[in-house]
Length: 112
Length: 113
Figure 1 (cartoon, rainbow over the protein chains, first blue to last red):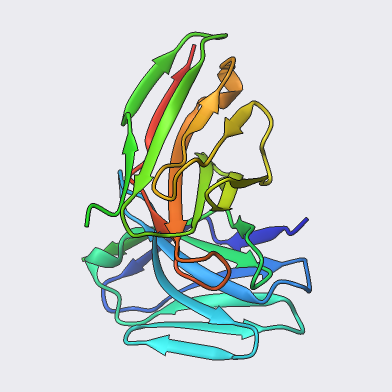
Figure 2: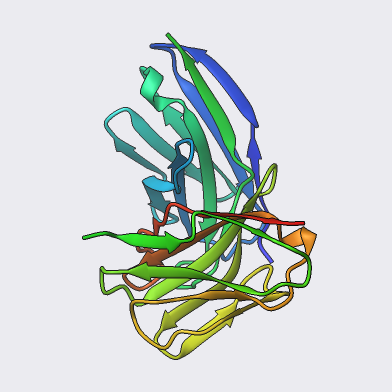
């Protein structure tokens, strides 16, 4: 089955700086890569996703890049704010399929 | 819309006891799923359903049963709880799986003694 690795496990940045979280996947059939944000005591919430026919996608301060050849994808958060502090998960799925494989999560702390 | 609801929020069981974790959604979603979240291991798929009457196993199905008799409800049953099933359980739903956004419930924290 698919194996998704996520790094780093913890990340601290100063407010206003950028944060980057990286994931790799093993199954070349995976072609859908969502990112979730989980705040303390809540369920994960989708923040951005990307399909394998696109190399980059941006939504305001959040962007995701995908390198299919190297089998890795990254989340970029610019101009970080304290409310960005949360745990972020990457995931991979063979699009059209119904099984999602998650990374182990990155705890992001934005220091005011 | 209430979205995805889960009950109970917290539960303590003794080894060998059985229980059912409830999940309901009011968005008329066809796809529903159950995950467990353990420290350092992310979320792992237990079972999922693509519609009423249709269920399938995920990555870690052993020790859990599911059924889907209605579009709205997708209960998760632990027949004989074990300490290894101590975890936080999340239910999620989406319009039809695949590329569609999954909406997660607030979770159930289960402790098995």
